[in-house]
Length: 307
Figure 1 (cartoon, one colour):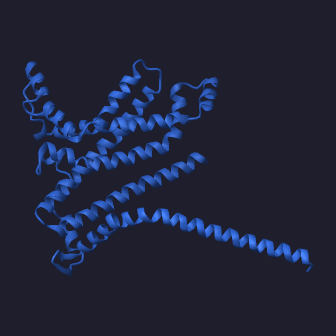
Figure 2 (cartoon, rainbow, N blue to C red; figure 1 turned 60 degrees about the vertical axis):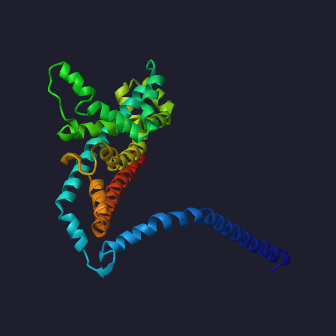
Figure 3 (spheres, one colour; figure 1 turned 90 degrees about the vertical axis):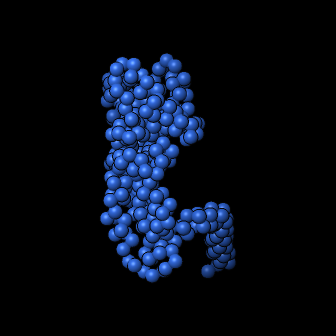
Protein backbone atom coordinates (compact mmCIF):
# COMPACT_ATOMS: atom_id res chain seq x y z
CA UNK A 1 0.00 0.00 0.00
CA UNK A 2 1.47 3.32 -1.08
CA UNK A 3 1.89 6.39 1.13
CA UNK A 4 -0.84 8.34 -0.74
CA UNK A 5 -3.29 5.47 -0.30
CA UNK A 6 -2.53 5.32 3.44
CA UNK A 7 -3.08 9.08 3.75
CA UNK A 8 -6.40 8.85 1.87
CA UNK A 9 -7.52 6.02 4.15
CA UNK A 10 -6.53 8.01 7.25
CA UNK A 11 -8.39 11.05 5.90
CA UNK A 12 -11.51 8.99 5.24
CA UNK A 13 -11.36 7.52 8.77
CA UNK A 14 -10.89 10.99 10.26
CA UNK A 15 -13.88 12.28 8.27
CA UNK A 16 -16.07 9.48 9.62
CA UNK A 17 -14.98 10.23 13.18
CA UNK A 18 -15.75 13.96 12.70
CA UNK A 19 -19.20 13.17 11.30
CA UNK A 20 -19.85 10.81 14.21
CA UNK A 21 -18.81 13.45 16.73
CA UNK A 22 -20.98 16.03 14.99
CA UNK A 23 -23.92 13.60 15.13
CA UNK A 24 -23.37 13.06 18.87
CA UNK A 25 -23.20 16.82 19.46
CA UNK A 26 -26.45 17.38 17.57
CA UNK A 27 -28.08 14.56 19.55
CA UNK A 28 -26.99 16.08 22.88
CA UNK A 29 -28.24 19.51 21.79
CA UNK A 30 -31.57 17.97 20.76
CA UNK A 31 -31.88 16.19 24.12
CA UNK A 32 -30.95 19.42 25.92
CA UNK A 33 -33.74 21.34 24.20
CA UNK A 34 -36.22 18.51 24.73
CA UNK A 35 -35.36 17.79 28.38
CA UNK A 36 -37.22 20.73 30.04
CA UNK A 37 -40.46 19.93 28.20
CA UNK A 38 -40.05 16.21 28.85
CA UNK A 39 -39.45 16.86 32.54
CA UNK A 40 -42.57 19.05 32.74
CA UNK A 41 -44.76 16.50 30.96
CA UNK A 42 -43.38 13.68 33.13
CA UNK A 43 -43.89 15.64 36.34
CA UNK A 44 -47.37 17.00 35.65
CA UNK A 45 -48.84 14.34 33.33
CA UNK A 46 -47.19 10.93 33.30
CA UNK A 47 -46.41 10.96 37.04
CA UNK A 48 -50.02 11.66 38.11
CA UNK A 49 -51.32 9.14 35.55
CA UNK A 50 -49.12 6.42 37.03
CA UNK A 51 -50.29 7.37 40.54
CA UNK A 52 -53.93 7.25 39.43
CA UNK A 53 -53.35 3.81 37.89
CA UNK A 54 -51.80 2.55 41.14
CA UNK A 55 -54.65 4.02 43.24
CA UNK A 56 -57.26 2.32 41.08
CA UNK A 57 -56.01 -1.08 42.32
CA UNK A 58 -55.89 -0.12 46.01
CA UNK A 59 -58.56 -0.39 48.68
CA UNK A 60 -58.46 3.27 49.78
CA UNK A 61 -56.09 6.27 49.86
CA UNK A 62 -54.98 5.28 53.36
CA UNK A 63 -54.95 1.52 52.73
CA UNK A 64 -52.62 0.33 49.98
CA UNK A 65 -54.06 -3.21 50.02
CA UNK A 66 -54.26 -4.61 46.47
CA UNK A 67 -57.89 -5.33 45.53
CA UNK A 68 -57.44 -6.26 41.88
CA UNK A 69 -60.25 -5.14 39.57
CA UNK A 70 -62.79 -4.54 42.35
CA UNK A 71 -62.78 -0.76 41.86
CA UNK A 72 -63.30 -1.18 38.11
CA UNK A 73 -66.17 -3.56 38.78
CA UNK A 74 -67.75 -0.98 41.10
CA UNK A 75 -67.54 1.64 38.39
CA UNK A 76 -68.72 -0.48 35.45
CA UNK A 77 -71.75 -1.82 37.37
CA UNK A 78 -72.70 1.63 38.70
CA UNK A 79 -75.98 2.90 37.22
CA UNK A 80 -74.82 6.51 37.28
CA UNK A 81 -71.64 5.64 35.34
CA UNK A 82 -73.59 3.66 32.76
CA UNK A 83 -76.03 6.55 32.26
CA UNK A 84 -73.16 9.06 32.05
CA UNK A 85 -71.28 6.93 29.53
CA UNK A 86 -74.40 6.49 27.38
CA UNK A 87 -75.16 10.23 27.43
CA UNK A 88 -71.55 11.16 26.62
CA UNK A 89 -71.38 8.69 23.73
CA UNK A 90 -74.73 9.79 22.34
CA UNK A 91 -73.79 13.46 22.54
CA UNK A 92 -70.45 12.82 20.78
CA UNK A 93 -72.17 10.82 18.03
CA UNK A 94 -74.50 13.78 17.43
CA UNK A 95 -72.06 16.65 17.92
CA UNK A 96 -68.88 15.51 16.16
CA UNK A 97 -70.32 14.75 12.68
CA UNK A 98 -72.35 17.97 12.76
CA UNK A 99 -69.30 19.99 13.83
CA UNK A 100 -67.27 18.57 10.93
CA UNK A 101 -69.91 18.68 8.19
CA UNK A 102 -71.33 22.12 9.02
CA UNK A 103 -67.85 23.64 9.36
CA UNK A 104 -66.86 22.19 5.98
CA UNK A 105 -70.02 23.59 4.35
CA UNK A 106 -69.36 27.03 5.85
CA UNK A 107 -65.73 26.91 4.68
CA UNK A 108 -66.84 26.02 1.14
CA UNK A 109 -69.31 28.93 1.15
CA UNK A 110 -66.73 31.41 2.46
CA UNK A 111 -64.19 30.14 -0.07
CA UNK A 112 -66.40 31.50 -2.86
CA UNK A 113 -67.11 35.11 -3.81
CA UNK A 114 -69.95 35.38 -1.31
CA UNK A 115 -71.00 38.99 -0.60
CA UNK A 116 -70.11 40.07 2.93
CA UNK A 117 -68.09 36.93 3.62
CA UNK A 118 -65.58 38.82 5.80
CA UNK A 119 -68.40 39.97 8.10
CA UNK A 120 -69.84 36.46 8.17
CA UNK A 121 -66.42 35.01 8.98
CA UNK A 122 -65.97 37.45 11.86
CA UNK A 123 -69.39 36.52 13.27
CA UNK A 124 -68.45 32.85 13.29
CA UNK A 125 -65.10 33.55 14.95
CA UNK A 126 -66.56 35.70 17.74
CA UNK A 127 -67.49 32.72 20.00
CA UNK A 128 -63.78 31.83 20.20
CA UNK A 129 -63.12 35.15 21.97
CA UNK A 130 -66.12 35.05 24.35
CA UNK A 131 -65.42 33.67 27.87
CA UNK A 132 -67.32 30.55 28.93
CA UNK A 133 -69.17 32.43 31.68
CA UNK A 134 -70.51 34.89 29.12
CA UNK A 135 -71.59 32.08 26.80
CA UNK A 136 -73.47 30.42 29.67
CA UNK A 137 -75.11 33.73 30.56
CA UNK A 138 -76.30 34.15 26.96
CA UNK A 139 -77.78 30.65 26.97
CA UNK A 140 -79.49 31.28 30.31
CA UNK A 141 -81.09 34.43 28.91
CA UNK A 142 -82.26 32.51 25.85
CA UNK A 143 -83.31 29.14 27.27
CA UNK A 144 -84.40 29.69 30.88
CA UNK A 145 -88.07 29.13 31.70
CA UNK A 146 -88.64 32.88 31.72
CA UNK A 147 -86.11 33.53 28.94
CA UNK A 148 -86.38 35.20 25.57
CA UNK A 149 -87.35 32.13 23.51
CA UNK A 150 -90.23 31.20 25.84
CA UNK A 151 -91.37 34.83 25.77
CA UNK A 152 -91.56 34.75 21.97
CA UNK A 153 -93.29 31.35 22.02
CA UNK A 154 -95.94 32.63 24.44
CA UNK A 155 -96.69 35.50 22.02
CA UNK A 156 -97.80 32.86 19.50
CA UNK A 157 -99.87 30.96 22.07
CA UNK A 158 -97.31 28.17 22.55
CA UNK A 159 -96.80 26.86 26.08
CA UNK A 160 -93.48 27.62 27.74
CA UNK A 161 -90.86 24.86 27.73
CA UNK A 162 -88.48 24.18 30.61
CA UNK A 163 -85.62 23.67 28.18
CA UNK A 164 -82.97 22.48 30.66
CA UNK A 165 -85.30 20.01 32.39
CA UNK A 166 -86.81 18.30 29.38
CA UNK A 167 -85.79 16.15 26.44
CA UNK A 168 -84.89 19.40 24.63
CA UNK A 169 -81.93 19.91 26.98
CA UNK A 170 -79.56 17.85 24.84
CA UNK A 171 -80.49 19.92 21.78
CA UNK A 172 -79.80 23.14 23.71
CA UNK A 173 -76.32 21.94 24.69
CA UNK A 174 -75.72 20.71 21.15
CA UNK A 175 -76.49 24.19 19.80
CA UNK A 176 -74.09 25.69 22.35
CA UNK A 177 -71.36 23.23 21.35
CA UNK A 178 -71.78 23.96 17.63
CA UNK A 179 -71.86 27.72 18.22
CA UNK A 180 -68.53 27.45 20.07
CA UNK A 181 -66.67 25.09 17.74
CA UNK A 182 -67.83 25.87 14.19
CA UNK A 183 -65.67 29.00 13.83
CA UNK A 184 -62.42 27.23 14.74
CA UNK A 185 -63.20 24.21 12.57
CA UNK A 186 -64.15 26.50 9.68
CA UNK A 187 -60.77 28.27 9.85
CA UNK A 188 -58.97 24.91 9.65
CA UNK A 189 -60.99 23.91 6.59
CA UNK A 190 -60.40 27.28 4.92
CA UNK A 191 -56.65 26.80 5.34
CA UNK A 192 -56.89 23.29 3.89
CA UNK A 193 -58.96 24.48 0.90
CA UNK A 194 -56.29 27.05 0.08
CA UNK A 195 -53.74 24.22 -0.13
CA UNK A 196 -55.66 22.36 -2.83
CA UNK A 197 -53.56 22.67 -6.05
CA UNK A 198 -55.25 25.26 -8.23
CA UNK A 199 -53.81 23.71 -11.41
CA UNK A 200 -55.80 20.52 -10.78
CA UNK A 201 -58.99 22.52 -10.36
CA UNK A 202 -58.29 24.48 -13.54
CA UNK A 203 -57.55 21.30 -15.48
CA UNK A 204 -60.78 19.67 -14.30
CA UNK A 205 -62.74 22.76 -15.38
CA UNK A 206 -61.23 22.51 -18.85
CA UNK A 207 -62.22 18.82 -18.94
CA UNK A 208 -65.81 19.85 -18.18
CA UNK A 209 -66.08 18.56 -14.59
CA UNK A 210 -68.82 20.19 -12.54
CA UNK A 211 -68.35 21.74 -9.10
CA UNK A 212 -69.62 18.63 -7.33
CA UNK A 213 -67.31 16.34 -9.27
CA UNK A 214 -64.35 18.68 -8.62
CA UNK A 215 -65.06 18.68 -4.89
CA UNK A 216 -65.46 14.93 -4.42
CA UNK A 217 -62.69 13.89 -6.82
CA UNK A 218 -60.04 16.53 -6.02
CA UNK A 219 -60.72 18.82 -3.06
CA UNK A 220 -62.04 16.12 -0.74
CA UNK A 221 -58.92 14.00 -1.28
CA UNK A 222 -56.69 16.84 -0.03
CA UNK A 223 -59.10 17.54 2.84
CA UNK A 224 -58.93 14.05 4.37
CA UNK A 225 -56.13 14.87 6.89
CA UNK A 226 -57.93 18.04 8.00
CA UNK A 227 -61.24 16.19 8.32
CA UNK A 228 -59.66 13.63 10.63
CA UNK A 229 -57.90 16.33 12.66
CA UNK A 230 -61.09 18.38 13.02
CA UNK A 231 -62.96 15.21 13.97
CA UNK A 232 -60.48 14.38 16.72
CA UNK A 233 -60.46 17.94 18.08
CA UNK A 234 -64.27 18.03 18.03
CA UNK A 235 -64.40 14.67 19.80
CA UNK A 236 -62.14 15.96 22.57
CA UNK A 237 -64.25 19.12 22.84
CA UNK A 238 -67.44 17.05 23.09
CA UNK A 239 -65.98 15.24 26.11
CA UNK A 240 -65.27 18.65 27.70
CA UNK A 241 -68.83 20.00 27.39
CA UNK A 242 -69.23 19.31 31.14
CA UNK A 243 -67.99 22.81 31.95
CA UNK A 244 -70.90 24.52 30.23
CA UNK A 245 -73.45 21.97 31.44
CA UNK A 246 -72.21 22.34 35.02
CA UNK A 247 -72.47 26.13 34.92
CA UNK A 248 -75.99 25.86 33.49
CA UNK A 249 -77.41 23.05 35.62
CA UNK A 250 -75.08 22.27 38.55
CA UNK A 251 -73.92 18.91 39.97
CA UNK A 252 -77.05 16.90 39.15
CA UNK A 253 -78.61 18.05 35.84
CA UNK A 254 -81.50 16.54 33.92
CA UNK A 255 -80.77 12.86 33.24
CA UNK A 256 -79.97 13.33 29.53
CA UNK A 257 -77.25 15.88 30.43
CA UNK A 258 -75.51 13.78 33.08
CA UNK A 259 -72.12 13.07 31.45
CA UNK A 260 -68.96 11.27 32.55
CA UNK A 261 -67.39 14.41 34.02
CA UNK A 262 -70.41 14.76 36.32
CA UNK A 263 -69.73 11.26 37.61
CA UNK A 264 -66.05 12.11 38.15
CA UNK A 265 -66.79 15.44 39.80
CA UNK A 266 -69.36 13.95 42.18
CA UNK A 267 -67.02 11.07 43.09
CA UNK A 268 -64.36 13.65 43.94
CA UNK A 269 -66.81 15.68 46.06
CA UNK A 270 -67.74 12.49 47.94
CA UNK A 271 -64.03 11.66 48.47
CA UNK A 272 -64.45 8.30 46.71
CA UNK A 273 -60.96 8.48 45.18
CA UNK A 274 -60.68 4.81 44.20
CA UNK A 275 -63.87 4.96 42.15
CA UNK A 276 -62.70 8.26 40.68
CA UNK A 277 -59.33 6.80 39.67
CA UNK A 278 -60.89 3.68 38.13
CA UNK A 279 -63.40 5.79 36.20
CA UNK A 280 -60.63 8.09 34.94
CA UNK A 281 -58.58 5.13 33.67
CA UNK A 282 -61.60 3.64 31.90
CA UNK A 283 -62.39 6.97 30.28
CA UNK A 284 -58.77 7.45 29.18
CA UNK A 285 -58.67 3.95 27.64
CA UNK A 286 -61.88 4.59 25.71
CA UNK A 287 -60.52 7.89 24.39
CA UNK A 288 -57.23 6.25 23.37
CA UNK A 289 -59.16 3.47 21.59
CA UNK A 290 -61.39 5.90 19.67
CA UNK A 291 -58.53 8.18 18.66
CA UNK A 292 -56.44 5.14 17.70
CA UNK A 293 -59.22 3.88 15.41
CA UNK A 294 -59.46 7.32 13.79
CA UNK A 295 -55.70 7.46 13.20
CA UNK A 296 -55.75 3.92 11.76
CA UNK A 297 -58.58 4.87 9.42
CA UNK A 298 -56.70 8.00 8.35
CA UNK A 299 -53.53 5.96 7.71
CA UNK A 300 -55.35 3.38 5.58
CA UNK A 301 -57.28 6.03 3.70
CA UNK A 302 -54.10 8.01 3.12
CA UNK A 303 -52.39 4.94 1.65
CA UNK A 304 -55.31 4.35 -0.69
CA UNK A 305 -55.20 8.00 -1.81
CA UNK A 306 -51.44 7.79 -2.49
CA UNK A 307 -51.91 4.63 -4.51
